[in-house]
Length: 539
Image 1 (tube, rainbow, N blue to C red):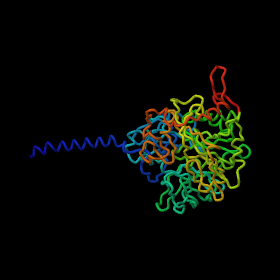
Image 2 (cartoon, helix red, strand yellow; image 1 turned 90 degrees about the vertical axis):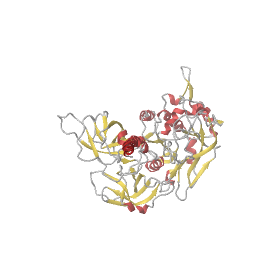
Image 3 (cartoon, one colour; image 1 turned 90 degrees about the horizontal axis):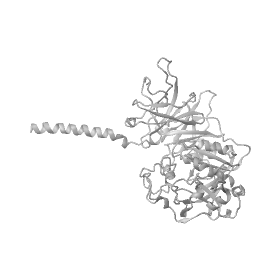
Image 4 (cartoon, rainbow, N blue to C red; image 1 turned 120 degrees about the horizontal axis):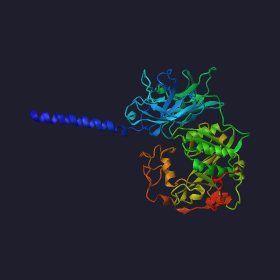
């Protein structure tokens, strides 16, 4: 009996050790960057070290704040004291691991430099997550007197603010978390700096409007946040209180502008801007969701050619609705009407079939003859499939995709900005209107949006990484499987379904394809066809 116990006990101990090691090894698989409870409020400043040889003076310390985004990306926000070469930096984490830090741009109002790095695998297993230090030479490790502050989470954050003439608007994630259910403004307070608080006037989705504070003149920047009174908790913030600001206007107010949120759309943008400018859109406001393609270069080329295109860096994932709310306020001084559509959507009227050339009056006549009390036009969408395309069509989406689903789906809007209600509530590209204004849905015989939604697989696959859908936060999670934002037959992984090039094709529709060729197509001297947006062009 004793011998049996002596032989059994080591086996039990060995089993426990083995299971513990397996658990530790796979722990990171049970944690995702988007599904971790918010960290308690802590100081959000860590150190930036501009490293130098050991014989040099101590490194300059610059304050930084870091936010954990999706896919284990860490956004490091640095004060604008940094100058010179932005390459060669690394993020050093409390596990003594480092990852490369890439300069990604400047966060506006006030300007702050942004770096992006990846949370190392071993650091993902250690909770709570802590903010990294930014190093020029990761081989030289700094001395730490204390633990770094906790890493902020993008899912619980005041990420932007906009001051108007009447109030301060905060954009906050993680406070109103359930669709259609919003906290009472009386449960909240706006906090400016450490002591000044004002009442919250409205609370809707991720938008909170506050009374402007009475602050004495001071040189320091004032951070603004939101307090949840019942929980005695202040939401972490990377936003600052700034003077009132508006989108710059060249002269008077434009009759019709367009605003959209974009991510890596450089190859599509020229066609979209060129086409819509020719039928009446005068200004384009793009909310850049962290593009890492040639978006900046393409926008600069468009501006040089005479198109009025402005970008606003809007890094935060899954914030399309609040971005549209921001645009409604930000552009209100220079745009009367705003068209909210995506870069893969093209407005079209069957009545234009016999027009030999486009005209800016095609859209301006719609909004300029607006009847009293009409504040929004709702336009239905036709969704196009891959149309046997396996790569992005070189002549553009209007020429490459010509087969669609037979039924219309959803609608997008052209809205009178002064008609939007104070809550700034919007869902799927259309807004709630103030009392006295009404919406009008246009028939598909009068006007429709061609939505080139299901494109060639390499283009469509990219949507998995940065989908800005309101109701499907993560396509790889088995949540809300019946949402219209999901793709029939696609599942939860970015794997090309069999027969993808022929999917979503019930009706051949080449009306806009033929029209854009008539308007913008040309035979080149080299013997091949091309569209006007494939070459240099004049406004």
